[in-house]
Image (tube, rainbow, N blue to C red):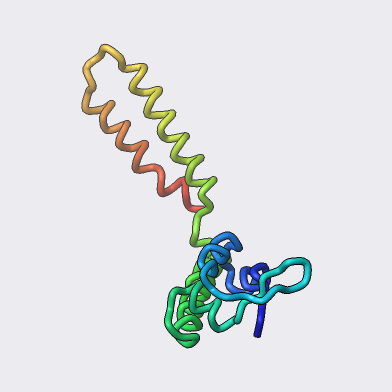
Length: 129
């Protein structure tokens, strides 16, 4: 089956620029509106850098399984969005910076050091969403 780059990108989930680079050495047929049509078997082998269609399908199945696992984590809410993680880290570092600036020129007491460590230890509790 002959397919254009955009269709191959849609089916594989690989960016079209990556596909274009990997298919640069493959022969193609001219399609409508200047589209390059590639043999699906040869294209998959080149995209997944394998010698056979079976190996390419196995690689695609492996990457699909990884993507499904990530989606399952998101649905179960066990994967914390990066925006929330960055916000919590920012809050903690601001609190630590404020504590250190307030203690400038003073001796760091055991109580102050423990307070700083407590701010670090509080991160996991803040990340349970």
